[in-house]
Length: 263
Image 1: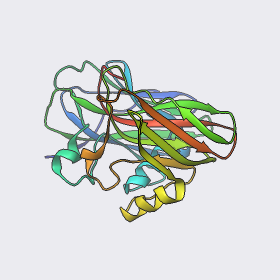
Image 2: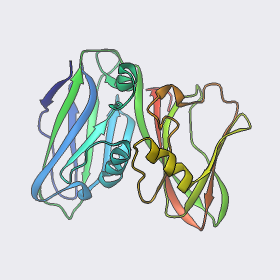
Image 3: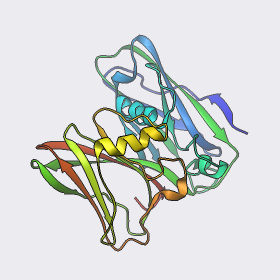
């Protein structure tokens, strides 16, 4: 049974500062709702959200970007509520829905939520609601990690997407770019994805996803069958090559199912 409750208040909810909240260990966290109220305070004033487990960063995105990822998957969006999701609520089976949830019964000493608030916010108020299930030990986690990449001009360019010494499961790759026109992926020298942005997005629309402006999204489980995630523990080589129409500094977000110690 999923339990919903309001967590303790954030510390230091001040414009131009970092608000922080320590979540209690024990439950299995499926998702968090961040609610923003105040004179002027909404998702556009959230310049970064970080979730840290035992001091290690497992999730990072700003408010606008996180909402775009949620909207792509078909989740609800709201100017004053943001979802930090560790699960897949639209997966085709119950196991797929819950895999990646953050179990904290054993192996976890601390879970810290940090929220950077822009200086333009006025009298901000920030609250957190958790959606949890029964206690479970820490296992594979849903991680969202970002990597900056500089692109030198038009053409085909390699990007290095880390997957750790022991390999990982790649759920999605979000390429934040105004100039990315396509993506090629090779695993062990074999092309497993090579398409243009319009064709890729048409496939996503057929599966009731909502492509987001300014992103190329690689989603091997577009049809919500999470057995189709990109497995890398058996990858002797893995290449991501972006097709670009011009010079740009882009941001690449990797969404993984991964043990805490790997990435």
